[in-house]
Each structure stands twice: as C-alpha cells, then as structure tokens.
Length: 112
Length: 113
Image 1 (tube, rainbow over the protein chains, first blue to last red):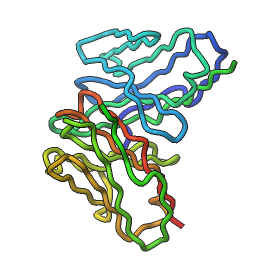
Image 2: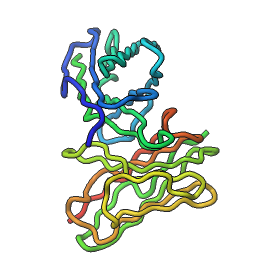
Image 3: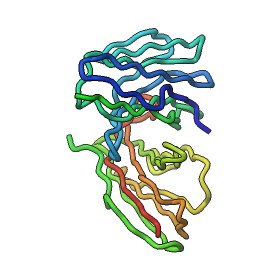
Image 4: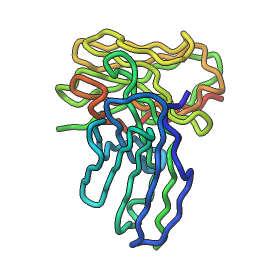
C-alpha cells in the first residue's frame, strides 16, 4: 500500500508561475524526501526534510513539513519549461528505514 | 563520479521466460535497492541489499529475487514472466542507509509479450 498520497495528480501552469504540490502520509516518519522524474527516466533526489524541520529551501524549491497533519508540500517558484516532470514524495519505512515508499506522484506541466 | 548504471535499458521477453537485470551503484555506495514502476501501481519497493545481504523485501512473489556481489553490483531476476511484470525497473544506491536519499539509475524498461 502507498504511504504517501499526492495532490493534485496533475497540474498545468504557465511558465513563470509557482507550482505547489502536496503530500500526505500515514505513519510517523524520520524524514520525507521529494524526487523528480522526467518522462520514463530515473528519479532525481531533490530535497530531504527531517521530522524536526518545518521548512527547507533549495534554490527555487521550498518544502514544508507538518508532522501534526502528516503532510508536506513542495513549492517550485518561477517555474520553467524544464520543470515539466512528475514529482514524488517518499518516506523511509521499515526497521532501520530500509524501505522507501513513494506516493503516486504529481504530473507537472509547464506551458511556455 | 559516475552515476548509477543499469543494463540493459530495454528488454522484450515472452511470458514464461526469465530475465536478469543488472545495476552498478555509485562507487562507494553499499546499499542497492530495486523498485518496480507501473502506471497502475506506481513505484513499489522490491528489495534492498547491503553488503551482499538482503535487508528488506517488498510484497512481491518469490518469482522476484535479487543478489548483491562483493563489489556492490546487484542483479535482480524475475522467473516465469507474466504480462503484468511489464514495467520500468529502477535501481537506486546510497552510501549506507536508504533513508538519507538515494541516487537512481535510468531504469530498465521490460516488456513482456
């Protein structure tokens, strides 16, 4: 079963606008990770936020984590055509956090 | 540093056959994980190896197996292929713990006919 559920499933915006994706999860976590996947390719690790952090930035990316609501959001500012991809949240589970469980992903399309 | 490599990139097999996929992790990385990605089920964890030992396994039938060699390279094998095994198989590596972020390979696209 999926640990994370993402919302929306698909998002289409104009270049230059901001894109926000949300992720909800079910169990307690040590950290939450966001990945990007360009069409049919491997995943690229974007950012990791630990359970004791509330917000983290990396370039045009801003991630928030609300452990009380078991939710996280990924904000991409000033979007570019190259940001078109699927975005996944993932949480490590299992003893020793040896299993990474992914959400279903948000398909982001940036229109020029 | 070279990234995670997977071979082959594309594969077409017939039902009932078996297949072996290979993954070479980033140099120095000792943890290798495998995932199956399908449109219906999304990304699902198959198993993780560390120092030649399987540390965790997902909910897949015994037809799916793997191993890791002393140089950290890993292989996964699927026996008695079914149509539903058609998927993108992704390999990921990390230095020690899976929970600190992983580096993914480009994947092997397996089509079962």
